[in-house]
Length: 239
Image (cartoon, rainbow, N blue to C red; front, side):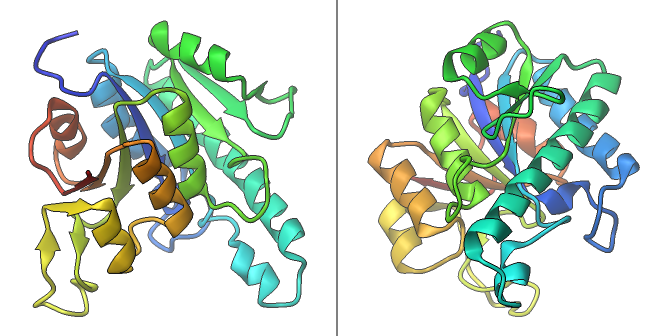
């Protein structure tokens, strides 16, 4: 790999909405192709990439719990939805020529490998992109926490949270034109200011294990490539 890359192995956290149409609902194969193109521009440079994808485009646990559904059932449904997104993303990446494996925290061997830490790392070492579906495999944990956990487990150099906004702001920049953008934050600042970068469990896990978090706009040209180079892009949360 070129020495210009600061981060050799990254965990990319994607929201399920990245795969949806403009409505934000469902899976749009054309949108999945766009995501695959952005990721492929980095994967083909030799950067080892693992991905955790959410399920907000298909199911949100709060939708069920607000209607009286048991939290455990609602969360299990969400975990299954992440696997659907993982398979859709795998298809788009494979059609782009990127060798890809899907592993799931909940075993479903007919469609994906079970998540095995050592096997996931070996895939990365062989330049295979690994998509980690099924969240943590446990209810009451978000896919943000799953992303933090997997980043630590695979010894990633950085956790990249891809969004539609070019970093972290003091408030919603679409509603408040005077919102302040942060270039750098400490973990405690992110937690205490309740900036909604990730849930507190995910942030605490990253803080305890010194896992830096970069929040970037996935759709801003070359932003993903720039962050792995170590350029100042978006917002960096670290010690």
